Image (cartoon, rainbow, N blue to C red; front, side, top):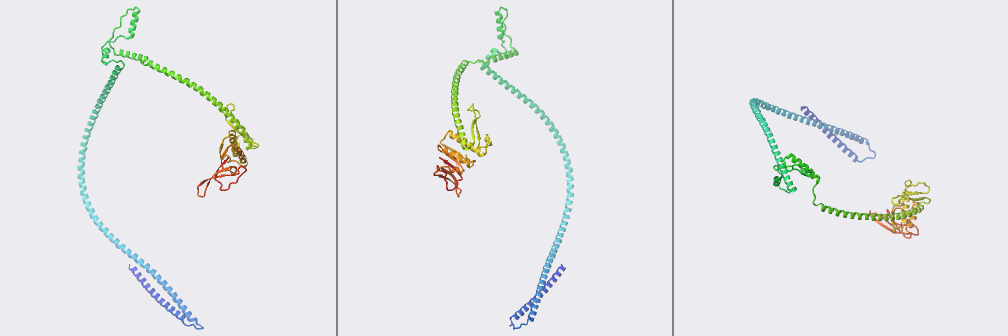
Length: 486
């Protein structure tokens, strides 16, 4: 810290010297400027001696150079002063931190002393506690051994009690099962008794008391019917036999007799007292159904007759329509394909109701008969030819066609428009198209256009003089058009 104070003193001395030099040089510069101004303000003779002025200018330059050097020295001193001040501040902070560290070390030493005293006290108390714990452990060990002995005795008693409980539970379960079994048997016997009583009362119309009085186990069993029949047959034949006497009741024997009688009764079946009424009802139902069957057969014969007449009429109409369409197709095809050859053929000529129709088309210059080998325009024109042939064979008041000529070039389109012109003489044509040539041949145009605001608008225009030739329609060309040819 003393070296820092000495360094700070030297810096302060150099700063004072630099300031004094700066003030001295500043005073010299001011004096030289005043002398220069005074020299410039004096009357200049005709012949000016520049020696003094040059000397003054040189002295002013030297003074300015001295001032600059003094300023640089001053700034250097100031920088050193700031550096010294920073070093002094760092030293002061280090001294303050050292004092704080010494205070903390002193406080830590005091805390260690107090902690040592506390540790001594804890050690003393720990020794006393350990001695107390040893005595408590010894007494606890003795108590634990006594408790373990008592627990072993209690476990033995519990085991014996559990074994006795399990034995008693087994006896209880056996008794409960026996009781349930007896109850189930008693219930079954009760249900069986009720069923027997119900059967006796319902099937034999006799009470239980009367049944026991007449057929009980104490009553002798009369001879069987078979034995009676055999005895009577032997007696009638002159044999000397004694009649069978009633025998004592024997349950197995009577059960076998009851089983055989049950089987014989099952084979015989129940007697139906309503058999005559049911037979009469079935006979009446049979007569009604027989009448209905005859009516259905007659209706079927009538329907087959009507179907035959309808088939004959359909065959007649279809045959006539086919021949007319085939004839017109040849003409129309030659019109649309000059020099070509087309015809319609039946796949099964012997069965007109199940036959199919094949279209044979041969454009000029080609030797193909399958439509799949034709170009798109040729197939489209062939289809139009078949369509127009049907129109000409079976005319209609109006026709609607949608883009039928979309795939045609200008030459084929001209032929098609000429063919449509023949149809317009007897029918009205409504054609949806984008072809300009088709639109030019129409009487009325209907189109849908979009205005500048994005709203669509339907436009209609009647073309005058359509019969004399093509008519130019001025205005916006519609995006899509419906051409009406009348």
